[in-house]
Length: 333
Image (tube, rainbow, N blue to C red; front, side, top):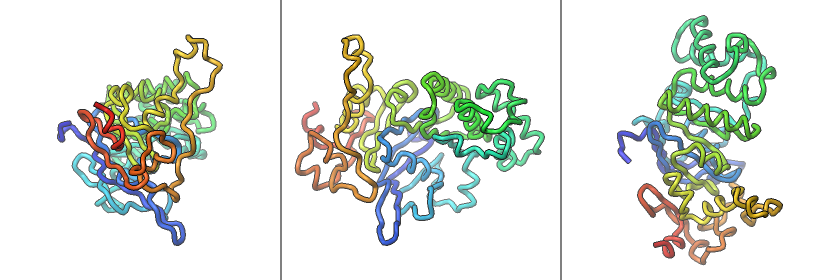
């Protein structure tokens, strides 16, 4: 990977929580990178640390008890972790936009959709309210909202779930950022609308040259929309690599089990459509009670004594493909 083509590099990022006298890491030494124009799928079960990692990139951690004790977030050569609050505030929206899993809870119910899109244009670009309003209408048109001049005067409760998500995408793109972070953007939508939102994100990537971090637990979404994958478990990155390589030949047992749990269309053809989908036994660990060693070992059928004793590091297993499992490293060619 050419360093000049890298837009974002997250290096050994940790996010620490303090609850009374207890101190523990929610995210620990997470490292990954994103090229310009690339779509990276950040994958893992609920509670794995995906959303907190993305909020940490923008230093928008949800609570005063959370902090970034170590690591660097290098965006286009600038270290976000070293910036003052005023400087990072200027980067939010202008350089990096974010759309959230539940737009209903992030859109202001008493402010028109057009005003919410126009607000950041006025803030970051210093244009008049009238000019910002015109740009907001154009953005709503670009994200596929019909009759945007009329709908801009509407409110979030008057929009469907899919239209609210489109409005949030318009707001995130208002200042033409280089990076868009999409946190589970299709989870609450039906299958048809999910496909429309994914197609919209990819169209915007192609037209604007956007880089996108797509947070999801759905490997079907990853297979459809992403170029590369970073898999998280227990607050740590356990595997990264090109999409096709990771899905075809995963090196980490957790990644392999996630893939095995996906619905397989071949089951219906085999007359097994009434069977239960495979699942990973056990439960993901809670942030304040992580097991020692590899955090996946209590649920892993390949676990050995050493897996319980030391934390495996990410190592290169194939070109641009890294995984944190010494056990599979010994059995793979």
